[in-house]
Length: 216
Image 1: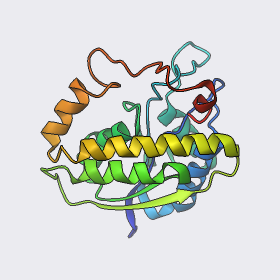
Image 2: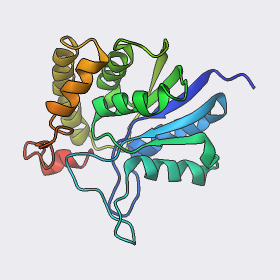
Image 3: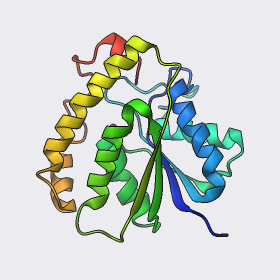
């Protein structure tokens, strides 16, 4: 069966204390579900966020965002063996990096459709095009992007999140302009990035207000 995509990729966007997904994440997944017959796999991304601890399941184990998203898709009728989870990343750069090194390169996933929310699209596209363009390329990639609306996010929260996204995109652009090779990105990610270096400083960032936290 010919398919337009090797994988549909869905970045993480939060998971609540009871394991529910926020409305904007569900909208991403609903769009992925609509397209899933046109792809070999759906790849769900993210361990969680540095801004809040992960919720725990009934046995006391952490609920990863990617796993919660995979469960949602299975409940919608997607076969579990057509879902790949990435449970290592904590931000959009990590989403891109780990999706490439864990799944896209070893599984020969070249044609990717990345689905995210309107407010996240610009930074998401910048991160994925940067990471998937790092040399050496395992193979050439065809990336396409699609945004879904987020009507259930309150207007004031959406405005706060858009401003946070703008600041994040500026930082990403500065970093990406200095790093063009995978080994340099690997060194930077694991020795300088606040979420992945040995002595992480990203978790519980006090600059993220309680209201902003509702968008994660």
